[in-house]
Image (tube, rainbow, N blue to C red; front, side, top):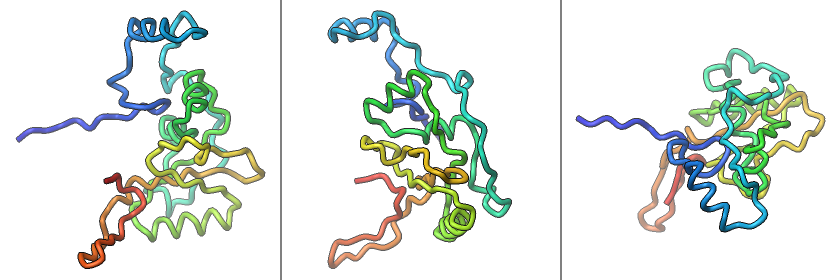
Length: 176
């Protein structure tokens, strides 16, 4: 029986945490791109970040799937556009979400949205985290707080119609 350790995605950029370029590689690639800093910026570590404290707490009924963990909050601040990666690399996470929710059922989503609506909390859907258009970034409006609604646990194929070749698949499923 073989066991595998799940790989962890980089919270601040593309790829896997265990596959980052070495300083030597960064210097070599940097030499090909004029105008870059001569010294590579080391990848940010969660313990270095100065995230604003969460402005709210989820009710106990949602606590099973809601996190205030700094890594969760940091990894849900931006997508993966160049400007997002640069800001994260420079440890600029001014509008990190207050909470990250990972519902496992439709009921969880409904309960979260009901609470957020009653509590004036902004909810931002977060799929695979690869947005390059700013769609997962909070714009700093007048809400009591912000929840990043991470859909990755909603990843099942619910129904397949073999005749039409259509399928009903939850929002967090990776494809194809």
